[in-house]
Length: 187
Image (tube, rainbow, N blue to C red; front, side, top):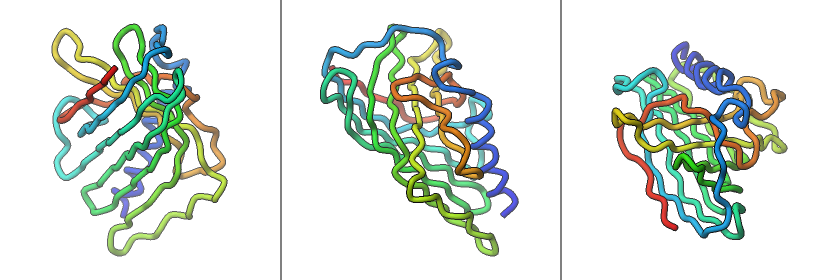
């Protein structure tokens, strides 16, 4: 249970370290005019370029623009911990943008958050029915060394009264490394 609670705290800390998504990300112009569709699945590591044994942080995204940068779709961020605990965040996509640097950002409010607590653990308090903070995922193209990064700005699952860390359509600075998977953007 300690690892699970520490993991929730770590996920929260990664979010907190990135600060406000729009201010933490590199400045770049966004593309709003074209119809776009994004499919993504990534296995991520928030500690470096190699896999973390017995821990999985994954994202799945299916989103499309409907009018300009307005978008519809769904994303799931799932963090499984070595002790068997899992945090799963379901997100309703409200924006899909592409930066001049090739980075693709999706944002949206949290629909729900689910905790699977390891045996002997204590279930965290449920989120209030009005708790739907904005979140952001930004997928960055590979750099010159081939390293791929993702920016994830979630919400504070330990303090539901904390303000959202992301803004609608705002990119998030890269704070995780892609271990497997990637994204496909259709225009």
